[in-house]
Each structure stands twice: as C-alpha cells, then as structure tokens.
Length: 80
Length: 386
Image (cartoon, rainbow over all chains, first blue to last red; front, top):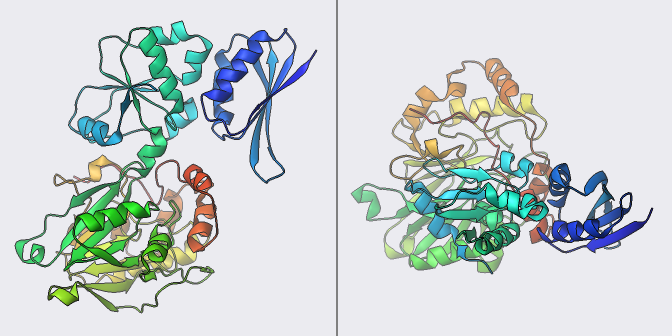
C-alpha cells in the first residue's frame, strides 16, 4: 500500500480536484493520496466529490499551518 | 477562457425577470448558505463542479438544452471549466465573472428621490452591496461628498464621487461593523480626510479618528453657498459606540440600530443584557424627538422585499414605529427577552472582522474569505413589510 502526496498549494478550484481525480484514477486499490491545499473551499469540495467519486474514498481531513503561518487544508483519500 | 458575463449585465437582467437559467456549480454547503438573488425569483439549477470532473457525461445530461445558460461558482474558476465542458458538448453558456466573490463585492448606487428644495442643495445616494445586504451612503453637496459606512472597496467611492463632481471630505462609520471590513480608514488615509467612528467602551480602537460629540453638526458643501447639516446622534446598543446621523433634518442614517423590519442585534459582544437595555433606550428615547416624517436609511437589509418601488431600502420613522415588532415592546425586560430569544450564533469570522475594523492587519484574501455570505446583523430577518 503506497502513500502519495499531491501539493496543490496556491491552486484555486477546480484545480485541486481535477488533479486529485487524475492521481486517484492512476493508483492501485488501497493506495492513498494526501492532497495539500490552501483553499479553504477545498474542505467541503472534497467531501462533496468523494460522495459520488468512483475511485476515491475520503479517509480524513485536517488543517495545519505551514512554516509561513499559512493555513493548509489536507485531505487523505484512498483508492477504492 | 470561456465566454464571460459581467454581474453589471446579469443582475439587471435578472431583476427584470428575464428567463435565464443559472447553473450554480458550488458545493452543497456553499449553495445552501448563500445564493445569488435578484428582485424576481432566479431559476437555478445546482450541479456541483466536481460532478462534472467525476462523470462529465452524467453531469452534462442534467443540464437542459435550449436555454440561455449562465454558470456560477465561488470565485469564477470552476464555472469557467464547466462552461468549457458545456461548449465542447455543444451547449452554449457564459461564466459569471468572479463568481460569488464578485457578487459579494458588487456595489450599485441609487439616487434617493429628494423633494425639489432638497435636490437643489444636495444629492443622497444609497449604495447597495446586494450580495451581502449592506448599505452605504454618499451625500453630495456643493462639490463636497461625505461617505457613510463604506465597504472596503475604497476606490469605488473615490470614482463615484469624482463622477458626481465632488471630492470626499469626510468619512463616517455608524459603528464598528462585525460583518464586513470598513473602507473608512483606507479612504481617510488615501485622501487625507478625517474619519469618524465611535468604538465605545470595551473596545480598543487603533485607528486614528476625528473627535465628535453627541448632537454635533457637520456642514457639507459650505464653500459654494449650498450646505447640508449632518447631526451626530449617539444610539448605543447594537454596539456600545453606535451612532446615527441625521442628514438635513430628515434622513436618518441609523446604521445597525434600526432596520426597516427589525432592530440591530445587541448580542454580538456577549453582553446581550447590557447592550440590549442600551438599545432599548436608544430606540425609545434617543430617537424620540425625531418626527414621524423622518426617513430611516439603515446599513443593512434582509431581502429584496425590503427594497421599495424606487429601488431604495428605507422607511418612514412613523411607519416603523408602528410596524417593527421590537419597537412595540414596552419595557427593557420584555425587549431584552425578545432579542435574546430571537438571535442565533454569530458567524465565526465576526470577531476577526471586528478586530480588523479596530485596526488589526489582515490580507485581502483573508478578508474576502471572512466576508463571504450575507450579513446577519438584524435580530430577526423577517420578510417584506407590507
């Protein structure tokens, strides 16, 4: 089981989900993807997307601050 | 880039009731908590943008054909993608430039229909920030302008005054706003003109402000022989420093003290008892000597039902004295009980916005995020008055 990271800091919607979907489709079932975003709107967007996504299961979400104090929104996804 | 539609074209068309179909592609939470509104009902279809990413064919199949279609999202990026996808599927559509972020910043001015004797001396404009339900005012007389409760889009007010042949000489805030960041300090700095706000007890104001005392009069436009008077009236309660301004003896800019169908929330500082009693006194006594003919011009409204046929949010003081439920309450206890029972939790960003309005620094991006959504400054958001 692999864990991949996707850094979409600074990207606005729809970019985080466009990129996450592309990554998820390429993963093997059980693999995980951690998406690091700076757009607060990504929190409800990932929840909404995962509800209907064929290959992505949302395992968790958390917020952190990066070294500059910027808020990070981190989404953990698992390939179904 | 997809074909774009500016709000300046879209909103008047929706107000006239034109039959556009609005495709809102935001997530469920955002869609439910804050919608684009017009004077007439807006026909809206909600399909989140990530449905187009996940299964474009299925999402495209949900969009009716043969309609004039405009696509809306939070900031204009996702709707741009959806317009492109629709275009590839042979469905023409246009993207609402800037999305709800632009809607929340959109300002439109309406000139109040003054009587001839007034119109010879001054103009009074109500500036409607319709996405948030915020109202600000520009008073123009003799080449001078006073701006009251400006939103943070300072250059809009500069341009507006210039278009009306006036220079801004004074900026006033009725109170420390909790729902939006004031443009007052920035306008004051940029133009080198005095700024007034009263924060009141319990707040540490870090902005330089011009001193004003209760019942003080400000003259505007005096150097050209035309002038009007703005009287400062302390009306604490919504905040301890809340101030109303009486323009030319007739137009009462009440801030968040009195709206056309409710009163301001006295609970945002966590002192609903104390501030509620102050608000009761302000409404019952501080405004008591004003005639029924005075016209109330508030800083907020709750819905398009509060906009009059002239396009203005206003009410005769006498009519509001009879119709606003909270003004019918006879005792401070009954008033405090009623307002305590009616208010909801303040939105999370209110404390941060208050802090910025007291002088704290914040980035444009942060402020944009905090300002999202409609104001919730009234005790109750009842529908239209009759």
